[in-house]
Length: 225
Image 1 (cartoon, rainbow, N blue to C red):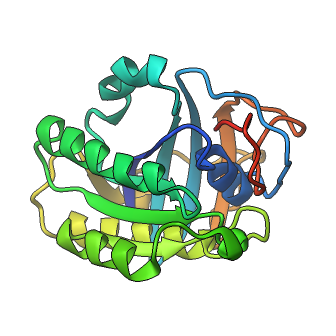
Image 2: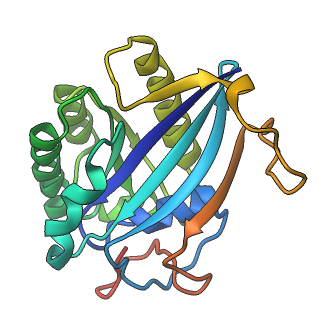
């Protein structure tokens, strides 16, 4: 089986739900209470697609402005990026464009980009038109998907589509930072190793959250991610 190792960064403004998405997907849990991400949190997960396994190193970055200067350290050598905004906040959508410019300036190799409109459960408060977000994503060669961490909707699709695109990117041989090898090169797994035959397996490497301080899905002033 072909194995791809890739780095993915999750970028976006404070409070859009970046940690919500990552923890909902990897940890299969949700909380309406949240503590700010300090710097970044690191997670890993395995996704099996098309007779291959994509091993993702997921960096969930802080959205607070005071941590902005640290961002280049986290997206250096990244192969993919989730650009997350809150569909109830036009400001958070506009901020995505700044992140894209930074990626284009600091990541020389091709990347898989995904624009993610989070909090789709708050449709009645929508401030960013679906068509506008879709059209912007198309201009930067990104996929667009709307998600709800509260209802666990759309998140699986985002990560699976990213894995498939990374697999396609690896076949182009244009990205030196994207490691690809045959699974026979891996070490023999121990009894405690996660079963990689599953479609999705994951573990948290450096957790910056607890069950009571993870995510959100409601419009509150004090929410961070």
